[in-house]
Picture 1 (tube, rainbow, N blue to C red):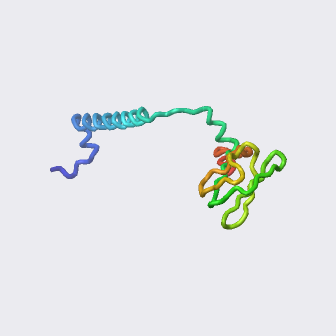
Picture 2 (picture 1 turned 120 degrees about the vertical axis):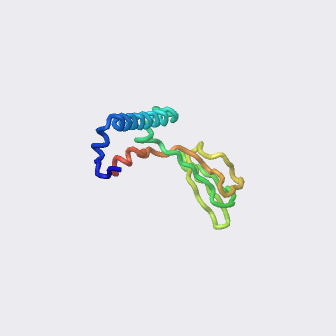
Picture 3 (picture 1 turned 90 degrees about the vertical axis):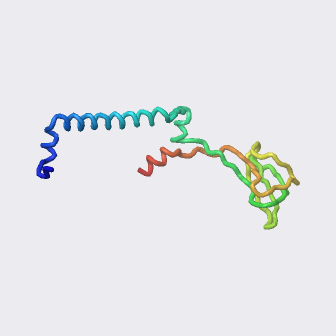
Length: 134
């Protein structure tokens, strides 16, 4: 073996040069084909109607019960209602909009029961917060 032959001298051989070029082209085609296949198999669905919510949205407020209790009293407070729920720890007063709850006085609540769900105020979306932080 000739150990003093450099790589450039080895590539000057036409057959070695042809193999190295063919190998490089095959490798590039394999990489391009792999990228094409990966992008083809991913199902991109653009939901353009959701785009504004990334900047600003109306928050949905959900209020859940923390413990076992009973609805003691429901009294009107302007356009809202004050709901008093009694449990082992005492009375808890919640203020809800008029059409956000569906129970009456004397109803029982369990942990995890949804007491009310209503639309809150405007909040900044994820993109707005990210732009503000950046």
